[in-house]
Length: 318
Image (cartoon, rainbow, N blue to C red; front, side, top):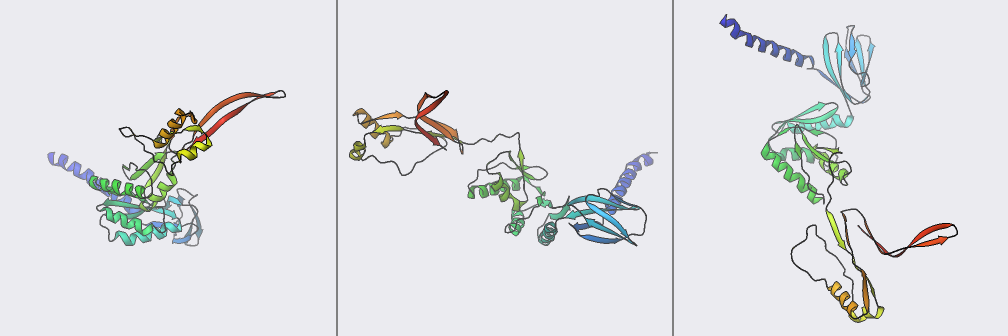
């Protein structure tokens, strides 16, 4: 009795292994079709079943079955008791699949597969330079694929650093990568650099998705504007000149700095040769507009229509 009980778990494992092996054998023969391609396979049975006829069409022709790829995707074909997986691919995906097959033979741990009509790099990434090799092979002629190989923690750090170095060279802000079943980058829905970031990550097969729940936090810019009225002759005698360039910083520094232009304007105002009309601080997000009006408005009556007219100086900063 004890021997029977002990042997029962091994019997269940053997049955389970047999089921998995038979399932793998059912899909051992995969049919690859390009869009619009027709392929003939031998078939002398009676029962034909296709999971999704929008992807593949089938037509009997004597002792053969003609399969034609209609749209990109993956479906199942059952011929009597035989089951085969069919993938319809874009011609460029077939070309990329064959190209990567030549590379992965020299890159330990990486495998190339076709999944849902797209090339997928699977397996384990042992060296970041192997991923870089694949990216360089498609950099001049970018093609869409997905990199879903497993990445260890130490290489994840290297990947995060290297990708953000690419962003820095292109004048883009650093991003935080998500290392789950595949490498992913999530950005706010209206990210201003979404197109550029996607183009940068395409050679690496990194999915760049948008998330409406994320909030885009742009740096805040503070600009000080001085509106002054100065006698024309005083500008010549004082040698007043506007600066040729300006500098800006996101975070203020400690300490006190004197502005030569502001000092000259204060001196002219003290002597009665001019006056500072306004000196506002405009605060806005980077890339957005800020508006300031030095003046006001007064009512203007035209026949039976009352309007208001602005007077003064209007300025925009962005």
